[in-house]
Length: 317
Image (tube, rainbow, N blue to C red):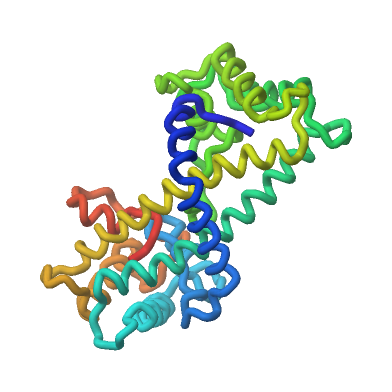
């Protein structure tokens, strides 16, 4: 339902250019999601992450809230075997990216389906009188509640001053699509702060909300039906997927180069597992051989761009 005017013109252009190609990508992703069992081992290999609790959410195979070195190495060995398609003990960039794209597209498809279900839930929540339409009054009331909730210091605008202290995260796999939401400060600013100054006034917010309602109300009857609501969200969702997928595959190439330490154009078994060991050792900050909530966050350190791509990206090599 929410449209970011900051990117509205580029979005319209990208949607026009991507109509055919994006449909093919989405179709392929759904095929991966429903047929993942046909790719040896791929359905059990997470795309997860190395940063903080994401490591546990990604690699905790038995669900006990911790990742032992043995547990991690077992999954990494399975990952290497799945990726090494020609079984020559070395990974080419194509093998690396092909294996990764299978997991990436599977996870994107899962997130996309979950996001569309959430859109249906949101529509029902907005439709307070249960007449199967969201009136402008219902829409505005929801927007008012969201603004008041996030304007924590009650100064009539939403800024970084309204940020809450960070709470301890629970282990979970990070979102790949990461659609912005008006339920948190970062999402609210991304969606409605059209001038990009990180200050969202009430007047600015209401103006953007009005544009969003008008754009979603395709038949211009002054209310939103379920089809209008979901189609508008789906269009934004598909744009987001295309952008995030492209960015993740680009990072995959950067990671490949970083792992290929001898720069011979391939990742040897030794290079692959050396990187795995570094990832585990970095996350196991208390050095007890297991990664748990008790491990303090890794210390920040100066790293090259390639090292940051490997150690800090949401997706794993």
